[in-house]
Amino acid sequence: MKNIIFFCATILALAAVPFLIIKKEATLSEGRTILLRLAPVDPRSLIQGDYMTLRYAMASEISGSELDNKGCIVVMLDKNNVARFVRVHKKEKLQDGEILLSYRKRGNLRLGAESFMFQEGDAGIYSHAKYGELKVDTEGSSVLVGLCGEDFRHIGKGKSR
Image (cartoon, rainbow, N blue to C red; front, side):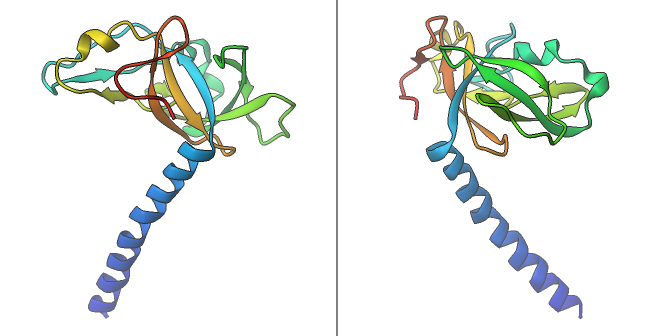
């Protein structure tokens, strides 16, 4: 019996990884691009190498008292695709132009990827980033695809998707 449970758990764990990869790839290819303004942070983590901690300014605009530990907020985009907080999503139908964005509340409100890794020696390129560029699917799941400058354009050596 223990062998059967172990075998089933192993198969389930091995099946979950490709499923998660496929879901993230679908978000990257079909998701909508949004920009979230970054809050000031230390641009590099010296202990972890060329790594940047990200905080989003919108997280400080939202009252944590009305939030569950996990859920979605509703945002709208301006002409530059910069997201603006509208309300906490309570499972109501979205209006035209509204987009869901998932959040987690673990002490601080987390709206997307919390770190950005870059190639050694590129810290100067990314230290002037003003926006996180995310792809968001219809369920609010997001994937960080890069960082943008004050001019709303992708910065760095790679291209945005």
